[in-house]
Amino acid sequence: MLKQRPTELRVGGLTRLSTCDWPGQLAATVFCQGCAWDCPYCHNPGLRPTRAPGQSPVPVAWDSVLAFLSSRRGLLDAVVFSGGEPTLQPVLLEAVGEVRRLGFRVGLHTAGMNPEPLRQLLPSLDWVGLDVKAPFADYARITGVQQSGERALASLRHLLGSGVEYEVRTTWHPALLSLEDLCRLKEELGSLGVTHYVVQRFRFQGARPLLPAVKEFPELQKFTAQCAFSEAFLRFEIR
Ligand code: SF4
Image (cartoon, rainbow, N blue to C red; front, side):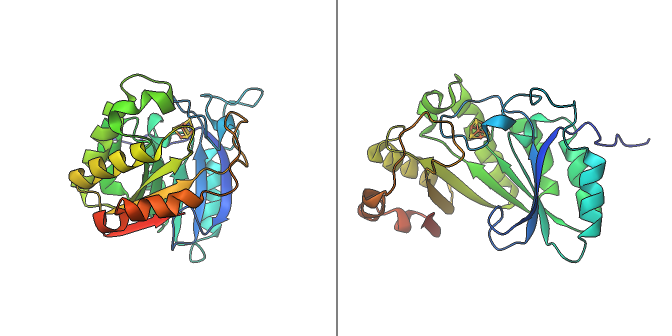
């Protein structure tokens, strides 16, 4: 049976070279259009609608992405699917397969909102950056969506059970997550078996003006040291 080609993948943008979307890899990043959550710190709010207003149904055609990647074989290590939320797109698995057949390693950025498609995708992935937004019972405060924490927790369990390399990361803004919340989250992640954890400082640039800008987070370093974050994970960093 002929496999479906992923020409329907809704690509909202393409970064041709990134050194930070998958730390340690020279990657191209494919930004998938559409996300079902509404985090105030979102850096890609234009990617939240299923289709970007005023644009053609496929703003960046998948075949043009593939043609670009073909021209970068031997020059790039990897391709990262980011968003938006890539796992909401039914043809993502096929798109990942086409990228793998070009010889690239494949990474995924996900908020874990779609656990079953993520589980099916994991055997085809080399690395996952999973956003964990808050202690799981408090998720709706950030995402605006009830039961979002349950979905993220199920995704995290799939990821940890898969053996795929990963980093779990949390974007921190003091107006959304207190330091005590962050410490509680550390306990939850530690008890689930997370070994690689990153706390990312909120960056105002690119986000909607919903949160106050914070230039420095001096208390974050001190607090994570007091709360023994480094002892709780094999790898912990503040980024
Ligand atoms: S889950 Fe990610 S893409 Fe979706 S709104 Fe939140 S930060 Fe933005």
